[in-house]
Length: 273
Image (cartoon, rainbow, N blue to C red; front, side, top):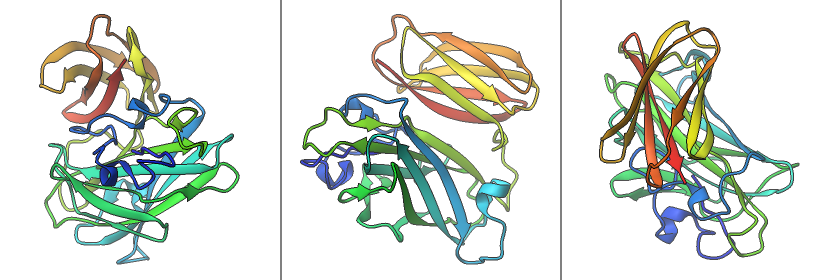
């Protein structure tokens, strides 16, 4: 989601010509592609949404749904205990990887939106300064019209040391959160089900970890950017569990894990080093 140095990408990767680095489907990678690699010490939390159109409505993060046609304040939180300067990039896509709604700057500055290859992203346009190693980034999202289905936000936070180079910077892994359209029935895994991939970026093998899952059988397929299926597996899962995937011999690049249970699905990006 974010490339940030004090040189070429201080104005954001899309503005600087690097492109979409959110780790979302169709992106060119993540900040870790250039900045020192991902760090276990940099975290991205959120996305938390508040309904601006109807302040009395349930917060989207509570019920996992958005109201079509409403305006939302979105908060993305980043954290690094050792660094206090940050950048970010985010996007909102449907299940087919098409931009959903309209991203706009909010209370946090300097932030702006750009279109990269038909995909809308929002990003820093200057250094974002945190407080105590934490930065809260606010921007706005105009939800699409009714019957558009689920939307997934993807984002990356990059903590930087401000030395004008890409070394010593620490990027988060890609954060994603899916919200369903309140007006339609959608086949998406419950928002309360936590699925993470580690390590990510990976080399040789990686693990899918399930937390607060609905017990049952989960099918996992791994695809490359050309849609080729490289791995397929399924496992009976309780509320917690793991699935390991062997990736030896896979080319470096972006892949996607397609996770399905009883027709409901989720897609997660994976980077192979």
